Image 1 (cartoon, rainbow, N blue to C red):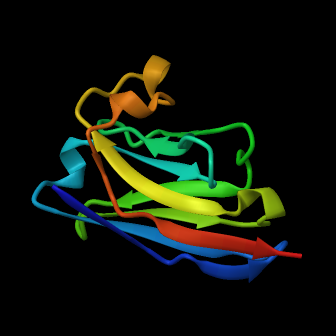
Image 2 (image 1 turned 30 degrees about the horizontal axis):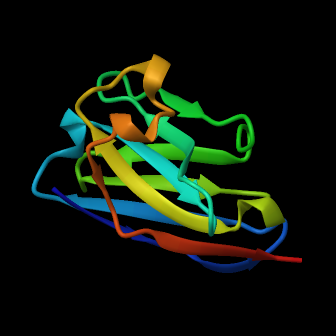
Image 3 (image 1 turned 120 degrees about the horizontal axis):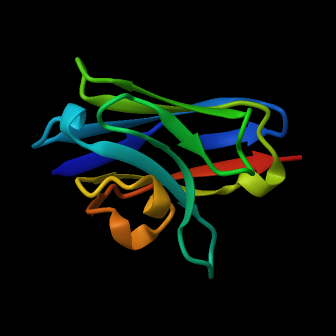
Amino acid sequence: VQLIESGGGLVQAGGSLRLSCAASGRLFSNAAVGWFRQVPGKGRIFVAAIARNNGRAYYADSVEDRFTVTRDNAWNTVYLQMNNLKLDDTAVYYCTVTDRWDVATMTWETQWNAWGQGTQVTVSS
């Protein structure tokens, strides 16, 4: 599977961005899809995920009520709508998929199978 993220960029604090993750080679409808982010010198951390079966969304506490993850199975695309962006949201954002969906371990980087190349999000003051 190939995952391609897009939609990153430079935005002022309080602004919004929508990231997209398009997949080729497999159907998103058969996989859980997640978003992680990474800043220089640190590992990737969980941001959000959307389940395979019921489409339920899960979020890190730091983005709850500001970010929304949705999926469009017809277009094989998952979106991350980011509102009220903060300086601490600056990072490279990665899309990922897994067949080993487990709510208890969804924040673990090792539970995800494939990763996109990442898209840079920079929030300025």
